[in-house]
Amino acid sequence: MNSQITKEQINEQGHLTIGGVDAVELAHQFGTPLVVYDVERIRSQIRAFRKVFEEENVAYAVSYASKAFSSIAMYQVANEEGAYTDVVSAGELYTALKADFPTSRISFHGNNKSKAELEMAVDHHIGKIILDNFYEIELLDQILQEKDEQMKVMLRIAPGISAHTHEYDQTGQVDSKFGFDLESGQADLALEKVLANPRMEMVGVHAHIGSQIFELNGFQMAAKKLMEIVENWREQYDYTASILNVGGGFGIKYTANDNPLRPEEFVRAIIQTIKEEANKNDFPIPEIDIEPGRSIVGPAGYNLYTTGSRKIIPGYRPYVAIDGGMGDNIRPALYDAEYETVLASDPHAKATEHVRIAGKYCESGDILAQDQALPVTQAGSILAMLDTGAYGYSMASNYNRNPRPAVVFAENGKAKLVIKRESLEDLVHLDQSYED
Image 1 (cartoon, rainbow, N blue to C red):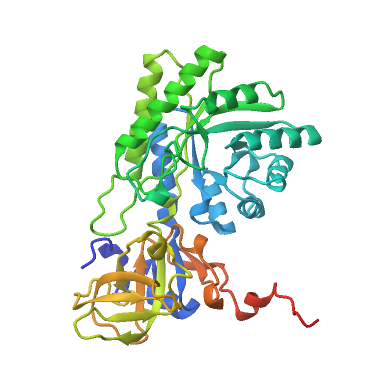
Image 2 (cartoon, rainbow, N blue to C red):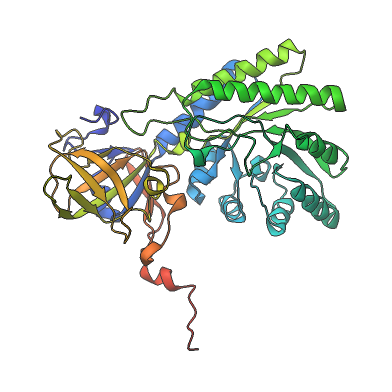
């Protein structure tokens, strides 16, 4: 029995439901592979974050890190819940604009923003740009002069804190491609350049120490470090930061072996740490911003697959092949990520075998699960992989010229197609004939 599936998610037929909609019916209606989001879970997590800030009585922004999953519908839901959002590309910004997301609540991240991307951000008067390096300071200054505009900015700091997570998910340590280093004095020099620029309004500092973090200590250390920075800047430069952005990275439960705190508990610890440091140094409590992505959409997402072939090798776990794989969820191949998978028609059925769930892509590494306990499946069984809402579809590809899946939002017993399944014609619509 999978403990991540509650009895409320099982309908009278014994089927898994997502947002009140039968998962087997979703697979039949929209086809597989299929990505489905329980929209109420997205909404409730945003509200849980906001509630903590309200209870702590501090100014704040819950900014959805849209690299986790970006679509017009997702930005619309985030907007309805009063969230902010941060984007990392012109494509994400364009999608947010198409969703009519308020530009004043958009921030722009990235370690190598192009001139075109910065111009787009300035032209649409987004809320703020998080500056990542000296080149970007100069480039933005050039754009602001050319357009006779001004922009609120923040500095991303590499605080020298390594999160206890996968090597690829660590972003706050000294040796990182992100942010201004503290030890070398880069951060101080960057502040001097921004404060001297009449077209840039320096509103605060940002740090992000990594992703899928389970321990409070890293976030508390980062909060203390940010407060130490802004306190030093007040003494050295007579500058008082009004915003502290502590990023995101709150870990979620993927498997039975994961035992994370509730995401909002991380936030409460961060808020209380900043309050303590501010009171200790008679520093005005700044606005506290967070940038959760995975913790908002990860647990809300499901990938539905149809099983096909089965390969049995005596003495080894069988391979159960599905109609998707690394093209719609590359995280197992990229990060050795693990998920739980259930039979959609009977998610609490007793497991009778341990199998490897193999994708259909022509790569030996296309294995979504190395050891998954399942009841016996037949060709045509519908499998539901849990907690796939973050970095699955957003990292999807057309490898082997396979179309990307459709995405459905399910809420209050109703399903809405929010991203169409790519067609074979979509795969070639940008191709040009060599013979013409």
